[in-house]
Image 1 (cartoon, rainbow, N blue to C red):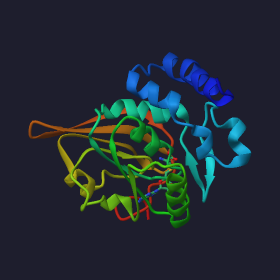
Image 2: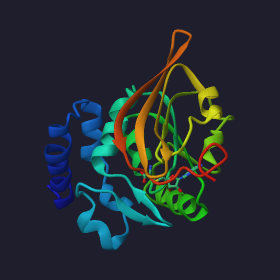
Image 3: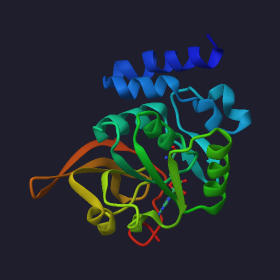
Length: 214
Ligand code: SAH
């Protein structure tokens, strides 16, 4: 077994299981996606540690537990069409791809978009579609989506994303009136209604855009 596989199995055992990540498909994806390839070379030794890491341009790859928690809260099944806002390193998108989903991901920072596009081509992630744009406007031509996940924190629920959410559908986002302190909020659309659940406190980088921070 490779040393990275050992680190991943340890990450699942020590960081995810004790905190209530129980979804077998999520655990399998977290144990298989090579997170160390999504960080800068100098940070590879820390790739499986219990923390977010810098990816350049003031952005971060989320802590493994937060990626697993958000993925579990999305309640996905294979074949669903999922939109992610905030491609960043591409790690969250790769986890969703490993679960057999049809993944669309939008990033607003040009350098991160091109870097991750090249990375996905080189490593043959062929089912993840990427776009350089303000993700608070969604991806109308590719929608509607069964699931939408925002991996940056904003002050409001972007209206275009709600419009691009199917019924039944789930939209998951960090929401906060203050920058840097948010709660994970899950918006559930079903049976003609939209309801909102406020979950754990989280700390994400800013969602910047028309329906985010300026
Ligand atoms: N999901 C990423 C986490 C990246 S951090 C990963 O797995 O690595 C959040 C990302 O959201 C940053 O790259 C940031 O540039 C991006 N972002 C912020 N506002 C955005 C917007 N309006 N549209 C698209 N991306 C945005």
